[in-house]
Amino acid sequence: MLCDKDQYVEELLILKTIAENLNQSNDMKQMLQTTLEKLLDLTHLETGWLFLIGDQSHYDQIADVNLPPALSRDNKKPMRCGDCLCLRLYWAGNLNEPVTIIECERLHNAKKECWGETRNLTHHATIPLTVQGKRLGLLNVGSPGKEHFSEGELALLQSVAYQIGTAVERTKLSEQREKQAVDSIARFIVDYYAKASKVTRYLWKINDMKRMLVAIVEELADAFGWPTVAMITSDDDNLYLRTVRQNEVTHRCKELVRKAAHKTARKSGIVQRAYEDQNVVVQKGLVRVLPGVQPHTYTAAIPLKHLERIFQTYETMGVLFIGRESEPFSELEVEILEVLAEHISLAIEKICLYYEWQDLLLVEERNRLARDLHDSVNQKLFSLSLLAQGVRETTLHENPHTAEAIHDIGQLAQETLTEMRTLIWQLRPSGEAKGILASLKDYAEKLGIQLTFIMKEIPVLTNRVEESLYRIGQEALNNISKHAGTNRAWIRMEQDSSTLYMKISDQGRGFNPGSPELCPHSLGLTSMRERASEIQGTLSISSEEGTGTMVTVMVPFLSKKEV
Image (cartoon, rainbow, N blue to C red; front, side):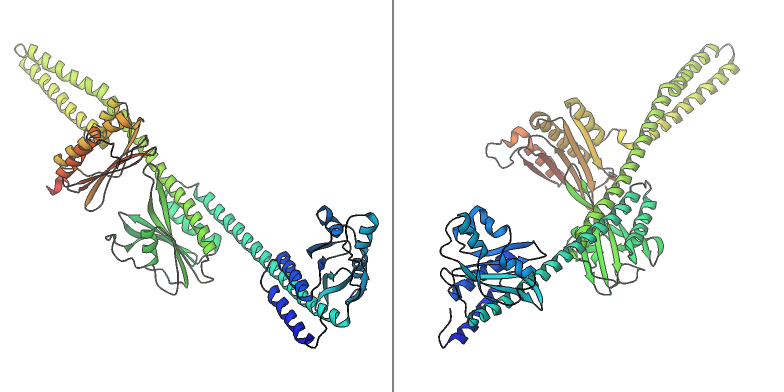
């Protein structure tokens, strides 16, 4: 090994190189393998292996370099199975210092059992790996024909072994800390989801919106120990604080948080940003966010969104606000809060569907009453009116007084009939009255298309706008019938302060609007655009082959009241 006058300097360089190598990786096996390779290269030794040793009979052969064929046979089975003299000395507590010469029992057995070539390797140095008195394993190195290691060589190898032992212990502690961190995160996630699951199970039992808004803030505050939880809802893009749980007291209110503004307007608070951007927003610092709600050091605003199924667009129905002092919201917690918000959104949407179902039941009952009144009472009153008129005419000359009384009966029947017709008309829901929607539904039925309307309250339109929208919808339904390969269609109508939107959608075969082979006249696209232009509107078409088509009409809003 090292024998010249510069031996001391070279040994320091070896130790420095080994230390640098040990600090290049946190992977135990990779670190020890590369370190052993570097050690043999620097010391000009040919073969080496490393054991990490536990209790008696348990050890891991974790690294090796240039083992002879006799020891590397059968996936290094001679090195992984059984014991040897150096291991027995180690377990007996008799191997605490580097051993000058040991005749290798594994190599002796290899020769005896004829396992293969040993490359004239018979002896090796064995150096224990320790750190602060704690024993970790053994470092074995040797070369063919080398049967002696000097005290200087063993001292150098022992210094290297100290470095390796320190690195092994450091890596084990690092792995232990990582495992503890993973376990802590796992416990955090399980606990968080357990609390969230308990809250959502309770919310799913509620079918009243006012109770739901109260239950959300109360259940979340109690389950997670948050000092402040608030629910903000959207109404025509205005944001209102509806319920707040603060210091274990719940308040119901309807405080304006943000007035509807143009989409390009600057978004200030975290609630407004969460609503507009549809993303979770967290904030640090004592800033008052909501009226009447005390500021907190750490706050989060989570949008409550629902997916409009047919048109595949997300709409924000409100914002969940959380304030606390304990700790900031981590990225992991934000991800879990997003999942929790999805469950809350679904629970709210379930109530909306429940209300719609109740409305449908009411509409069906009103229609049934209207039909019954029309088919029975209305017809009988009409018959009574005709009968009274006939009897009056036959008795007019014979008994004028009786005729006059019969005339009064007929007049009363006619007035009652008029009132009955008015009542029947009032019982009919607005969607049953003939207008653009009912007309398009009738037209779709003639084409064999099942048409579904998705809308909120639709204003009364001018005749010109209504006629143009009807013709555009008619042409779009024609195209669906002829080209889409489906019998389902949807029409969505909505408005903001200045624009009315009508969207006709199908989930048919679709097409490529930019294809040069497509003749726009064959699909009536030109006529639809011209009709939209006549009412100062615009028409756009989005479609992809295999995914359906959507026709969108945007018209400046003008109701009959404004004309």
